[in-house]
Amino acid sequence: MAADLMTVTGPVAAEDLGRVLVHEHVLVSYPGDELDPTSTWTREGCVEVAVERMAQLQAFGVKTFVDPCPIELGRDPELMLEVAERSGMNIVCATGFYHEWMGIPAYWRMRTPQEIAELYLHEIEHGIGTTGIRPGIVKMAIYDPPGQHDLNVIEGGAIAAAESGLPVITHCENSRGGDVIQAALARHGADPARCLIGHQDQDPDHTNLEAAIERGSFVGIDRIGQTCYAPEAQRVDVITKLLADGYQDWLCLSQDHCCSVRGPKLAPAGIPEFDPPLAVQITLRPHDYIFTDFVPLLAAAGVADDVVEHIFTDNPRRLLT
Image (tube, rainbow, N blue to C red; front, top):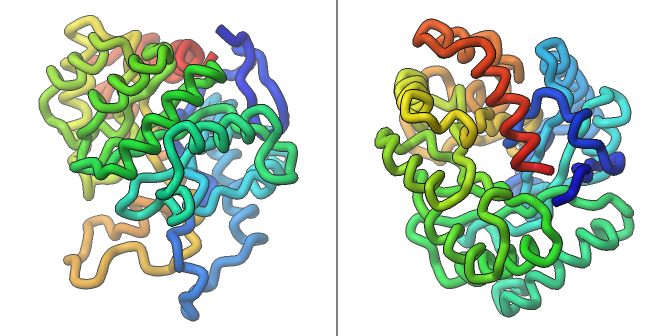
């Protein structure tokens, strides 16, 4: 097991990770958003906002910001590097494609799982493109239900995770598909304890999360603040039940919040107004919301400070290193 975590600025020792948010984003860009003439996004503005957000988190002891942005959703390792150097935050980028409903470029839909794994491993070993920046995690995403392209990419990710030893951060649409990902990891000999089964916020049945833990992986309540997926009270209920059943060592919390989204239109046309607006839930709210607003809800539900610290510090360190 590696003692270090690879960040965009280089390896960082496990004991220097501090508090960790395991699923956040500097930038997300949906395919085609660069064509929208109403966009006002600028790289300079994105960097300024991201540096400000990192300062918000550092005030609460966060030292490591994991950004599992998929390859084709605007992943920009050089932008992450600039933010990391200006802010002093440990920022981790990923290799790996998104799910087929919104991602997986046509060329890679025609590749085998082994060919997909070879791309991931090339980035892990040699760096992304010509940047020399190496990913510290493998991203695996699955749609609901998964299509054949999803399954091929998951197999490729499992091969790369097994051969590289890197941790895996997952996107599970509608909180489903974690068992499929875990089965793929097992087939290829990857360690399930280096995998976070993410986006479990939508599942109100804590026993499903416990089943994922019993199969050997961490689970993520990692869309905190996004009430379009689940009310905060449901998250608190699931978390407290997991803790009461003795699973505090296998839980990670994060927000899946974006410092910047390049496309100006976040919600599909015809969707009713969100409360708060979707832009606030996804990108405009301060990044320290998880500490200023959500952690007090846990405290009110009886979760002790040392348990909160364990979840933000010890659990991510075990997952990532």
